[in-house]
Amino acid sequence: MITGQQAEVFWSVVAECLVRFHAHPVTLACKEVAEYRAHLAEAPKGMRRGMVYHSEPFEVASRIAGDAVQLSDVAQEYAAMMEAAFPFPSESLAMRERRARYGPDR
Image 1 (cartoon, rainbow, N blue to C red):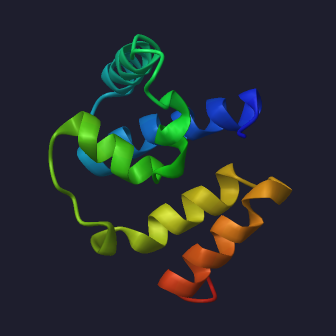
Image 2: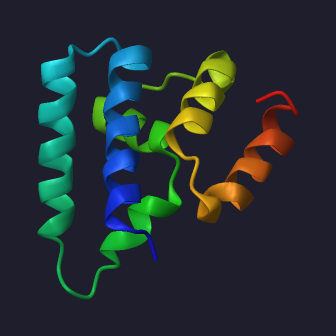
């Protein structure tokens, strides 16, 4: 289960991805994230709303933006962003997986 603080950080990274990698203005990125979150909150009760947190923020931002920036093109910047955003102990496994995927210095 993700904490409220982790959820807020997750969504702030989604917004940051929209700005950095999809060239959205900050105000538009924040609006789109708020609308996407509201859409998820309105999902039927049988839907697993928390499943979004199993996705990479980069992937969620790409879904919102509707374009296909390749993660491999921005991997270093994204890995640094994630390292700074998620210093939580519960994220250590995910960070190890990212390091395995992108290299030990990320």
